Image (cartoon, rainbow, N blue to C red; front, side, top):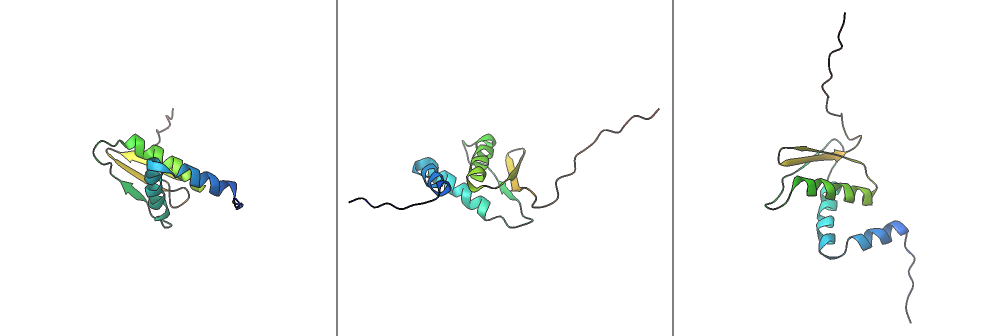
Length: 100
């Protein structure tokens, strides 16, 4: 006779999305995100044949699964990420206003 176990929808979605070869990669990225402490950022350098766009996409997908909001930026071939609200935002350049 089959057994029934009740789980949350979030847990079921997480388990279903983390199966197979893609799931192994997603679990690795989940570990990357979970290692972050407050005030820390992660830096990922792609392996050969991997793109920064793929890294950004995976980070976003895993953050959504975890219910976290990440800031993800690329500088050259390196991807930096941190939890939103985990530190000061980088300063942005602003144009000077013209005065008459």
